Image (cartoon, rainbow, N blue to C red):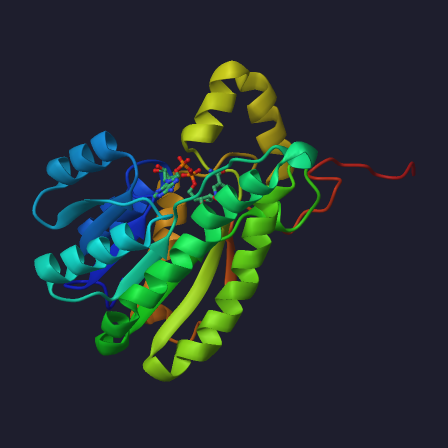
Length: 260
Ligand SMILES: NC(=O)c1ccc[n+]([C@@H]2O[C@H](COP(=O)([O-])OP(=O)(O)OC[C@H]3O[C@@H](n4cnc5c(N)ncnc54)[C@H](O)[C@@H]3O)[C@@H](O)[C@H]2O)c1
C-alpha cells in the first residue's frame, strides 16, 4: 500500500489480537509502531520479537499522564507521528445491572482514552502532511444485543465522534475514519469458541455472508488501507470489514423461500 513506508503509528490495544495484527502489518509495510497497551508482558514480548521498529509503551488509556508519555516516547524514538489507531477496548458490560462506575469505566477506556491520545498526538499528526486516525467501531453499534447496554453505546459514540473529528481536522490534512469489524478471531472470540466450537461456528456461518469468522489480519489490512494514500479521499467514513455481516438483516443467511 502506498504512503506507509517510513511512517510512524501508535496502535492502542496493540499487544494482542486485532491490534497486534495491525502492528505486524505496519511493520511489513516499512512503518515504525508504538504499541500502547496495559498488557505489559505481552506488549514487551511482541515489541522484542518484532525488533527496532516496534516500541512498547505501557499505557493505560485512563491515564492522561501515561498517554502523554506514550506520545513523548514515540516522538523521541521515531521522530514523528503519522497514524493513530484506536484498537483498544474493554468488553466490560453488565447490561441492565451496569452501575455508574461500570458505565464510566467502559466509556473511559473505549472512548475518552482515544480522544485524549488524539489531543496529545495532534501537533505531530498536523505536521505529517498525510496523517490518518482509525477508530474501531463494531457491528454491536447498530442493533440490540441481549444483556449488553454499555459496550455497544461506546461503539455508537465512536462513529459520531469519528464524523466530528474528521470535520475538525480536515484542514490539517488529517483523515479520520472507523472500521466496523464483524466477528473476528481475537481473545474473546477464541474463548467463546473454546467453550463451544460448533455453536460459535454455526452462528458465524449464519451471520456473515461469507460464512466464517474474519481473521485479525483481514481487519488489519483494511486499517492500513485507510491510513495509506490510496485512501486519500476517504474521511469521516465507517468501513464495514465483516464478511457481509452489516448487509444482512435479522434473517441472516437463512433461505426462506415462499412455497411455489
Ligand atoms: N473481535 C471481534 O469480533 C470484534 C468485533 C467488532 C469490533 N471489535 C473491536 O476490535 C478492537 C480489538 O478487539 P479485540 O477483539 O482484538 O479485543 P482484545 O480484548 O483481544 O484486545 C483489546 C486490547 O485492548 C487492550 N486494552 C484494554 N483496556 C485497555 C486500557 N485501559 N488501556 C490500554 N489498552 C487496553 C487490551 O489489553 C487488549 O490488548 C476493539 O476495539 C473491539 O471493540 C472486535
